[in-house]
Image (cartoon, rainbow, N blue to C red; front, side):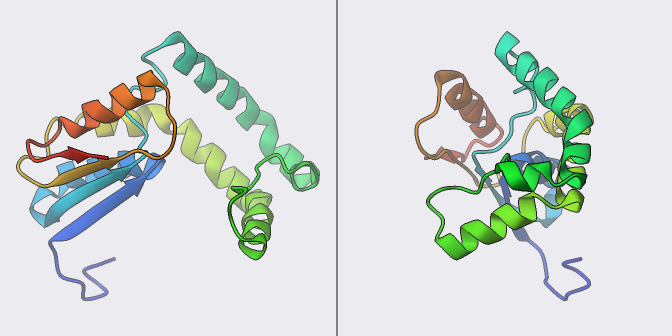
Length: 164
């Protein structure tokens, strides 16, 4: 897409949340096109397998993914604010995010993305290094020790990594 748009490499790849898994895979597969990588509160390849809590979250979310599309089509998700927007967003943007999050298409896409977690995580985990490419790992707000440890582990993919 970037090539077709006439945007020449190398690129700085930025991934937030699940996008971090995709960014890792891209950096591994197309290393020559990557100038650097930024991971912002990135998913970590073994976040759902490392601990009992992570496995429980994965099971609960998987079960929810079975009924959530139906609840969305029935309009229940939109009525319940089940997928709320961040409260610090301005009112207009918060309303836009809430409306988007309660669409059947968005919910179906999110469920499909979550179902692909094992495969996406395995692909991202195959990235052992991004060589000498700059890497920044950014974590926002208060986080538990396990999450911070996993973010620190992501920074080990590059000898030039920095964390914030």
